[in-house]
Every structure is written in C-alpha cells, then in structure tokens.
Length: 395
Figure (cartoon, rainbow, N blue to C red):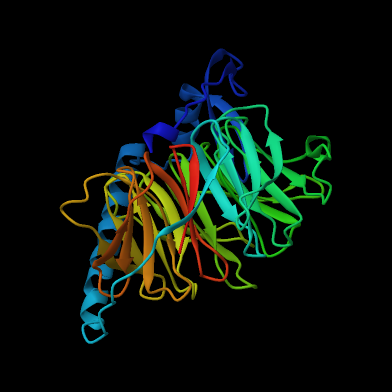
C-alpha cells in the first residue's frame, strides 16, 4: 500500500562501467550486482539472437501469459459459493471487544500470537516492540529499536524469542528472559539484512530459521544463529508486502504478495516460484494460508479479498460488496476455516463466510485503519492492531 512504500535511491560507481550514476540493484544467479541503467540494458541485449529484441521478447511473454490464462479459464467451471449452496447458513455471530491494549505512542503496525495462546508481541511506528500478557493486559517486555516504523514482528515457535524489523532494512531477534528487568537490547542479534525496508517476518517450524520479505522485491530465508543467508527468492517486480508460511509441520512452501499485484507460491528448498496468481487490481497487502494448506487468501487495496485453490490452480471466490470501497489491509482465517476476518482502511473488520462468499458480521471499535488481524492459536480469540495506537482482543 502507498502508506508503507519507501524508495531507497542508491548512487555510486557502476560495477560495470565504473561511472558514478543512479544504480539498479539486480540479481544474477542469486548474486547481487549494482549496474547503471545503461549497462543493465546492454547486458539484457547481449544474449539476444538475430532478429530478437527486448520488445519482441516482452510481446512473446505476454502472448504466452494470455494462453496460460485461457487454459486456466477452461477449468473454471464452478465457483465455491455454487458448490456450497446446500451448506447451512451461519447464525448470528456475537463477537465483542473483550480487551483493549494501550501502551504504544503511535500507529501499531504488526502483531503476533505466542504459541502459548496468551502472550502477544506488537510493533509500532513509535519504534517500540511490546510483549503483552493478553489475560492481564500487563506489558512483560519493552524493546526500543533504533528506527521508527517497526513494520514486522513475530513470535518464535518456542515462545522464547521475538523477531522484528522495519525501516532499518534489518530483522533482529531478541531472546526473551523471565527477568523482566533484564536489558534485552544487549542480547539483540541482527539476523537479516535487506537493501530496503523489512515488511514481514516469520519463523519456520523451529527457532533456528527466519523468513523475511522486503521492499527490495525479494524474500529470504536466514539462519538465526549465524545470520547466514540460506536461500533468496526473486520473482516479484515491486515491493513484497506480506508472506505466510504453509501451516503443516513439514511444509516447505510459503506464499508472498506485493505491490506488483501478484501472489507467488515458493519452494523453500529450491528457491523456485512454483505457482503465481494475478487477479487483483491494486497492491496486495496481506496473504494468508487456509488452515488445511491447500488454499490461501489475499487482501488488497482494490477493496477485495480473494480466495485461491492451489490444487485447482485458480481463484475460486471473491469477497466484496458495493458498500465496501476502502482497501483491505489484513486478513486471517478462523481455526475451522469457515470464517475470514479482514481488516479495512475504514476502521472496520469484516467477517466473511468463506463458503457462501457473504458477509457474516462487521466489527466496530477501532478509530483508525486496521493494520493487522490474527486469530489465536486455539481459535478462541481474535487480536487486531490499528493505527489508533491500540490493540483489541475480540471473542
């Protein structure tokens, strides 16, 4: 989304012609190089055969893309709501605010639940990361980062560490201690380093590996202990704004979405983009796997949420209403997968019936944009973060 997009202009000597000029950061076989625009164009044309041009290759790729969409269209014989016609309609939902967490001095940008179903970590534009006890509302830990706009935070699976990052282009890991007076900043470990802001982070099935997404258009897998880059993922043509790991314990795939309006599925072992979906009309702000891992949903600035079936390799549902005109910034599924909670820029959380495609409820309470919604690990509560400087717990 435009409010969270930042451009880092790099100026210096080109690694090819050595002239000082604005540089483009590109990757060749996972190796980063900095070339000026002229040298990039020369390099792109170097491998062309007689009669070929960059324009002709672009035209050919567009033709192939259209053929692929036509083949996908032939398989689009039925929509999800048609299959679910005989499914019983949901009853009235009695979801209310049960807790309001106050403590941040500016917009809350991200939050995550601990696996113990009780603790929450949140990050804010005030440069602070807070670990909360959701039952008592106590602040258990407070971390000050050297930059504002801490856009990403995540709890480790063990609950013994948190990761966070933002405009400093880094993602750092903080081990948590039972001693609430201990200086956690002294134990900070810088793990990930991108060439632009860090937009998202999540641990894999263990505390030892960290997955990050960035405004530099890439995602990356890091070893937490050594800080070594294990795998990089290149395929987006603009800022990557969100990622989510496949839910199975042995899952080796993740989904990412970004400002290029694409959602990509990646193989973590090979670094390859194995599936790609492009049906949104604006930036994709959030992506989230369905609990079974066979599908995922995306939220976009085009005011829609879309549901994609990985086995059918296509979009199967769109969640939208004429009255919903503001962008969707975040989403998450209920534990059963029947409900989809989506936070919008009009300060509301819409609850969608995944099967029927209809809106089941609207949650009011926040006084500014809803930046994050996450269902607790046991499925009994929903936590939302907002630009009104608060977090709310619903059930």
